[in-house]
Length: 309
Ligand code: ATP
Ligand code: MN
Ligand code: MN
Image (tube, rainbow, N blue to C red; front, side):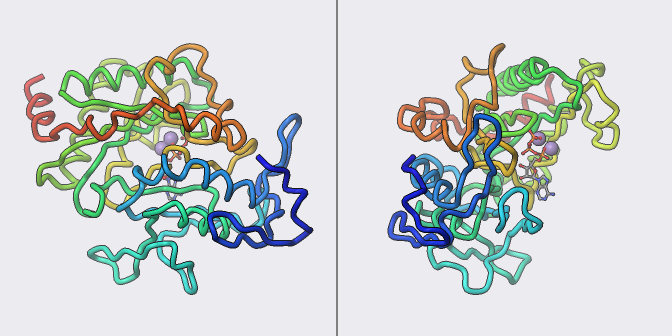
């Protein structure tokens, strides 16, 4: 990244023809060997990864988590709806059941507008693009208790993939930028609704927890009891979100939710390696998830197969 010292204090910069004010504002403070990340760095990050990211969020309502004064600042908003005076590079989308329009990003310039309002994280719905009421993918959110080794999370992700594989579904894995992993499964819901999709996800997780109750559980209230991984199927709902692949996280070190190939999901995987600084040079040759669109499989078949197991 170009040094931000070229910006005068409090000055503006232009990225993809979008003005970024207070470009030198630090959003992620530096730590040890990590350089601080300024607002301009975030804008340049979104510019670098926009072409990869947009296909995964376009046509889907997408919340922003904004930290106007950075991750150590007092203010923090989880913003679902388009706000007053919001940039017209951010699309407004109306969905049934809510008069207020939701935020949507259909092009990279919108991401720069997101950086301008200090949107450090992007959390889309999991609907089919441009069909907010239709499930488009399932997300299995693996949430380890603090004392669970990361190797256990890796094993859980592989097991979910295998279980979904026997049901005819194809899965992709990403780091979260946090403690766990997400397994993402593109589906063709074929007219099925979210309650049906969610129940399917719950059944898959329930069977997995029943087979290894010492390792997994699906009951959130017991999830903090330690030693186990909460198989969080609750992302699979109309209004639920999961962090987007390649979205940064508002956590120390500016980590990124990194899409992985399954060959990377094994011993030695270090999610902290993937940050706003390290990811841009990797994106051009990123092969992970490249067959995502071709991996969409029918959900009704999977439900049928599950009922026969
Ligand atoms: P980690 O690996 O640390 O669990 P994560 O992104 O999976 O990272 P979770 O707390 O498990 O974090 O949340 C999963 C998803 O649920 C988030 O990515 C987010 O989209 C959504 N979510 C979680 N908490 C909230 C919240 N308070 N408000 C809105 N959405 C939330
Ligand atoms: Mn999680
Ligand atoms: Mn969770």
